[in-house]
Length: 302
Length: 112
Picture: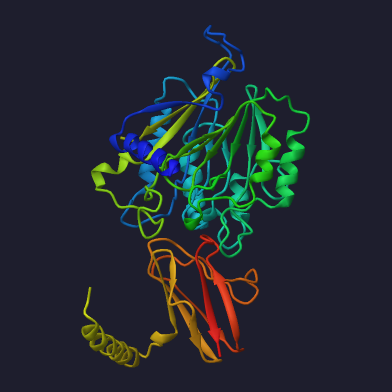
């Protein structure tokens, strides 16, 4: 019930096009820098986009190229230039070469270092071969997961969209889970961690596949860390949950909205009047400073 | 909402119309699984050995049809809206399948 209430709150925000902020990762009371209030100077910011669905052509948005471009224009107009961009999957709608090419060209226009995780729409038919050729991280393990560091924050990019069986949600698999455990070994508990994955890593609504069935061992391995922020896509709306030191956040799509949890027969594209579309699509800016931790701001395209 | 008597009258009529259309168009309507609203229907579908079953995606979302043995028995490409996939079931048995894009979507074909 809490999830639904949180969702309604977020929907109200998104629906009215109001820019809202939330301190993610480490609540201010638990700042890594203690009670320091001085304005820090050594932070950085990055942006998250998600579910661009290039190739989608149904009535919910006949032109996802234009809405992606609007998102990139919004990013280009941010007062602080982001250090990088994160794409949390469903780059394309049907994993077709021309869709990958169009997405690649549009995204390159942002002129930002971009890190991707695949969505289930990016790996149809070939387990992601075409996707990884274009957007895979260099030197990543064969499964496609990887990690990197930026400005003192450790990013873990997970892959939970292949190896599905009947009635499962997202799947990480033992090999990837073992890799996460090894990747975190030896890291200081004060290192802020950001985990990226397409399908939510916590159970939002398993009936619609909005869950990752085998994610528990990952959070077990993350337990010692003081700041963990999980950024997901997949459900085309902002839903957040804070559980202990872990903050879970899903993002808006740049292509089309999806219904609220259980609010329709299925999780298909949700029709809104054309003039309202940009009020339910959006981007996320994440600012990090050692003193204040991560601060997330979701902005609609309106 | 509909009184029982009316329902009894309507259902055979609808079935008769459907059969007539199927015959006229040369289609095999009873051997079709429709995909809509993230569901396979009907499920389970019972057919005789040798039947060619067709899945018809009427949803706005793309879907796939993959046998539960990891696609060893049958596996479609991505089916966009109005795309179809067919598979002929020669051997009797119970065949479970799912959509590999939305694995919460499951269905069963019974061949007997």
